[in-house]
Every structure is written in C-alpha cells, then in structure tokens.
Image 1 (spheres, rainbow, N blue to C red):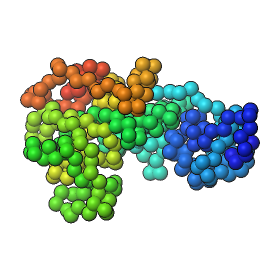
Image 2: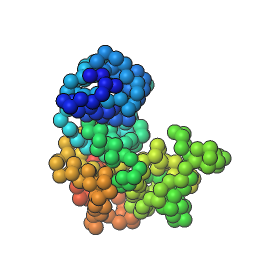
Image 3: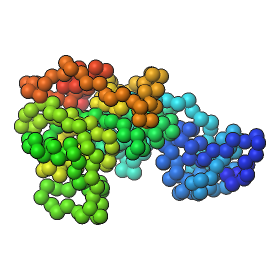
Image 4: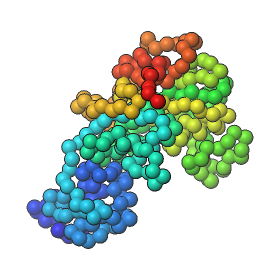
Length: 306
C-alpha cells in the first residue's frame, strides 16, 4: 500500500507525521518539515503531501533512507537544562544540544523551548501527541520562572508586564531607547503574567508565571521596560517542579504523565505555592537554585562542577 492508496479493511492508515513522531524520530512538527522537504519515502516513493497516510504495520517507510521501525514505548523525562545548550535535536552551528544528555539510545525531543542562555526544567519525550497538546496556545499550560534583572524596575513597570506589553516577534531583542516596530510590522501583545518579587536587591529576583512561550519572551518583556535580564531559570512546567541537578534528568512517574495530560486539556491544578518560601527581604546572597517537589530550595543554588 502506498500513501495514496485507498484504505482497505485490513489496514489502519495514519498520517505520516504521526507515524514518524510515534517512532521517536522527531516531533510531529519536525516530521512535517521532513515530509515537505522530500526526505520521506513510502514503499520507495517520495511523499511530500502533509495529508498523506500510510499503514505502519504494512508499508515500508524511510526517512533519509533509513527504514522506520515500529512505535517506541512512550518515554517522558524532566531535564535540568544547563546554560549554553540548544533546545533542539540538532544544531547547524554544532553547539551542544539537550539531546546530548540522552546518549543511551533514547530518542526523545524537547517540548517547547528554553533559549541558549536560559536554564532549568525542560520536558523531553517521544510522545508527539502529548507534546503537541502541551504546546498549543489553547492549552494555556503555566510555566514558572525565576528571573534576575539588572537594575530595579518600578512597581508601575512591573504592573505593565503583568497586564501585557508589546514585544517584537523576531529573535532579536530591541535595545532600550530604540524605535519599536509598528504593530503590523511584527509586534505582538504578551498575555497577562503573574509576577512577584522574590528578593529585593539592586539586581532583584522575580518569580514569573506565564501561559505562553514566545521566543525569548521574558527577555523582551523586561527590555520593553528598560531592564536587561541577567538570568532565567525555569522551575515549573504545569504540574511538574524541578527536582534534579543541572545536567541531570529523571523519568516521570505514571501519575505525573497523567497530570500532564490533564494540564494539556486545561484540567490541571495550579502549581502549588510553598508558604515556607523565604520572603523578598531575605538576606540570602543568591537566588535561582534547584527546586524540590515542595520548592523549598528555590532560593539556593546547588554547587556544580565547572
């Protein structure tokens, strides 16, 4: 059967991008790019139509000439991404990527993104359906960040961020004082954010909870009010709380996976707040450390080898 053959009773055709994602080769979006680029063959014929289907049980599907095997067992991991790693499966500039932490034959890909200079919680999986459900805008899954800012923003400026500000869509951050693009030239309004001060200092730390994940969004938001972001660390993703050291990962429990599915459907609980967390006037010297399931260690950074 080819991708364009009629469906028969014994077959169960599925969209090619779903089959590729289920095999753990790439996310569904990346699979669509592979198909459009002519890198996928079904029974010896190159397929470029995104709506094409095939039967994974009977058809021979190849990606870049390599025969695709059956679906892998779904795997789900939480990774503590260090800085200077790219959130992608491969990088044309040959920089280290987050998949480098999974060298034991695990073929997983990141859900969403953390930029090169940011660190913290990153969900890794080979479940393309769940990844798509979590990242679609309608899911409104909450992401929690600890953010260190250069200089002290005014409370009115922080209120602007809470209600939403206009930022550039592109990858570059606009320098303070430069002329912003017009709205129809690539400007977009950010969704309302929950922000609270964690540590009051010359360069304060904030906790930010966002429901969207635009490219370099937090950095752009603070640049819009005239402040540079020094550090970003994600400590929460929906029901998940960061609880591993930098560069380490662990597999999720079945209950955590179930919670993620509920979050993707908009049914997940709000991230728990720890009433024992230190107040903003804490005299600790640093912020931004790893979190435990109760988040008691949010304000203490673990020692890490250079």
